[in-house]
Image 1 (cartoon, rainbow, N blue to C red):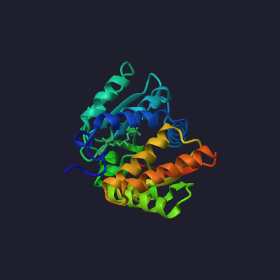
Image 2 (cartoon, protein in one colour):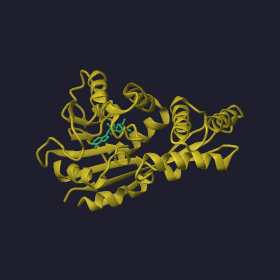
Image 3 (cartoon, rainbow, N blue to C red):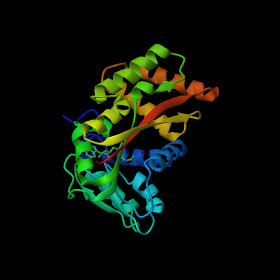
Length: 267
Ligand SMILES: C[S@@+](CC[C@H](N)C(=O)[O-])C[C@H]1O[C@@H](n2cnc3c(N)ncnc32)[C@H](O)[C@@H]1O
């Protein structure tokens, strides 16, 4: 049986091409771009840094890193999905980024090699986040930074005329999909458990008021999963989506979710 979270094992999911496409849609969303840039600045990423991204997906974050590290920098990405790595190889062509197939809990690098290791919206999807953070720490040089960022589904706020149905769908779907839907707020503890020091928390809010493609697709997928997991029937899921459309047409749509970033230093 495939895992209910498509990102856990993308290559075994129902439609890997759709997952690849959705990562790129998210990557292009203006609010998401702002979030990423603020997080990368907070780590910070410096010119000539050697950086590894764990769970790099299609390379959205790696491509943002190219101008930050400059010509003297070195960038590498790993991901366990062949489908996303194939897309990353195509989308990152000519950038000099090195891409490898690997699980975050077993990185194919010797110790102490990177100035920075980071994982963006990955810890939510892995069975053992501390094991991944330990591996990130192992391959980071002493004094280097380990940085992780995740959304936290306990902070999702949405305007909708039916609050009870909204809570049933949103809370029901994430409790089926993830071991820890509140993964974001737990990231500082994950880094400390992995032996990192001077751990800082950095919270960003993703805010959307126009129902742009990324948010629309996100909510449509929540409705489809609510039906798939038997939380609501198809009629209720459609009623919920119609409520969202009505709110957006009235100009009163608000969708916010916190993204927690944690940065620690390798002793
Ligand atoms: C939501 S995507 C984020 C991709 C990219 N970081 C971004 O922000 O666009 C999550 C990624 O984590 C990867 N992933 C899942 N399990 C993993 C694991 N055990 N180790 C490393 N990456 C993993 C998935 O294949 C997927 O590409």
